[in-house]
Length: 351
Ligand SMILES: [Zn+2]
Image (tube, rainbow, N blue to C red; front, side):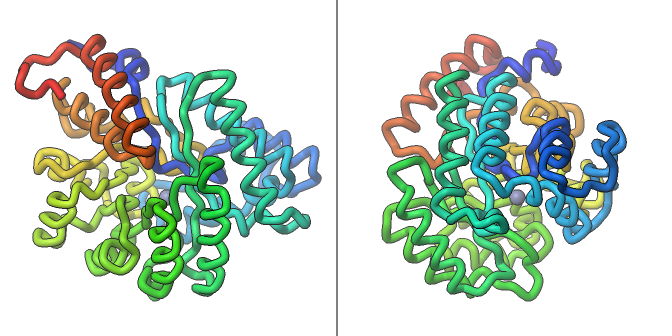
């Protein structure tokens, strides 16, 4: 069986690590910037596309610079609703059945929006995508390591206020070096005590100690990236034993220099070792990618076969921050569809 782009596109997928402000359509960024009088490095769409994708082997700060432009145009309810809807629409079009979108609401207050309005606008856009395209979604609020821990506490309260409306988890992102996750422990304690989920960007630019803090101090149910988990076999066992999801974003990891070359990525080791690893886009705009492309990259670079792909896709569905019953239902549906499109060579590996 040919694991080509058309087949991978049709297979039911999840995208659980996807930043709203990194996943605009380039045309939308340009249109919003022109309408709002926001300055961009160029108004030529093709040049803009090139400017937005950082060179391979860059660093995290260089990668993050690009977000200044996208965040600038996302300061109104209409713009936030629109990009959330379009992201859901784009994901649905490539058979992403379940999408978790994340962003940092406090970056969107420059023109006077309240944090509640910023959350409601994005939830409205995701709801519209669900109504129009059937895609299921969850929203994750992202706190920044460089912010004061008191700011994370405010964000935790915001997340809890909107738990019933579609906010599923709290996340932590930003420079790992010098900004330990443990500083934000109280905020994560607060959301966990409200029965919500936790994911933390860790082990991308810093070593296993950062992942250990994310898990043991912040109670992470999933780890964002986890590229350097490979350096610590004991911790890898712990992540495996506790079925902690590892959200791998291949293209982004090469762009930020988390790995020097795609071939060096520890992803195939994680997969073959049985970790609950799944593939995600991180930033569809800056990484010029989508879920199909990430899957195709994995197939081509690491020689995945149909059983690897099946396992990988099911890991995504098992790692969602849905409530158990909804998660189980979606997992069964996805499994049936995957089996229909991708008959197994080995019956023992079927789900
Ligand atoms: Zn990320």
